[in-house]
Image (cartoon, rainbow over the protein chains, first blue to last red):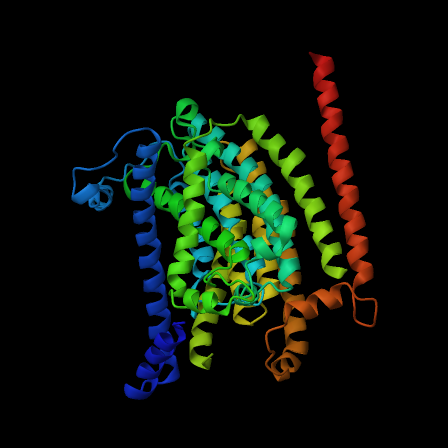
Length: 356
Length: 178
């Protein structure tokens, strides 16, 4: 299978040996390259997802979706992007200026920090922490602060209600998402994302882990959808009651930040689910069938990763356009009285099963 | 990592910590203070990352920012309005604070003076393995921490029960008033 380490070490070699740069400049150039590549991927994935969402949503509702700009409306999203970049950013008169302009950056930085730690393909992994899963859970909590600050500093009661709902929802669902991931950490015996992917070479955890992995997978998907503020869990924005929730007062690219962060968060949730449950970039291997395994190895690892992500994203869109919105008490009841007890029992059971 | 590169990163982080901790205590707006505190804590986590102690950095982010700061921001958001400013402290209060700051600075200066030479002599540490941390946290041997761990878990349990009790009492009273 193609290893992206060849590319990265070639670049490193080019800078160090062929151009004769010293350690400092090599590192500086590599930092910038990694940052630019990640930022470009971040924006591109959001663009692709926005197009996919509009098309798939249209098909669910028996419409055609965007089809005027370019073939099948493919350039529509790019046109929309240019439009949002040229829009005026309107300062709100009685808002708290500093926090108002700072809030979107918290949201986008929180999701970008998570995005940077994902293993995209074999060897294509910006930073591989020993504590990978813990790191991902930790930095994703930055987004909550951005949302609450946005709602408060807009000085608008609908925004504030939306922000309070978002805070309650994100903090609650973080628990069962974390517990579901911890179940898989118990199975893998490691928190390092690369080790977790490697240990699924002889079968993905969703098959290997039996009932525990299946329960954790379903819980993680539900909690993950809730954490992206989408699907039946879009209470913080609920357009029919709160206008647009915490980002009502934002305009132009400031709103664009929230919009992009929402879609990339959807991708991140799917990518984490892929890595932890569906084997990450690992091809489908069935122990015993060597010929089959070899054929599967010829498919590039990036195709596997993004294919599985696309599957998880499609599940999310399917749920979003099929179910009505929950009420806030139903939402919290679902987390605290159903999901959290189940995931606690699940993690205890898997710990017992692994020790035996 | 190269010495020069890590030095630059350290100075940036140190600058952020110094400036935002001063701003935290001098800002007149409560929520601004909380946000400056957030920057201080984040930059501290950055220093842990730079020291290759990733576990402590992640714990710093998830406990201080994901837990305590979110709680702080929530309580400020619920109790204050946009445009509210805090009163200027009285002369007496300012004098006491100044005295405490000077004492604290002296204490820190003494500690740094006494122990910093030894710290610099310590060898560069490799990244601490997650398994090692887990084992020493839950071990019963020498330099292992099962007793504090259990004591803290009992304390947390007591906090949870207390929280539930307080929430239940309020509910009853509201019902009676109606």
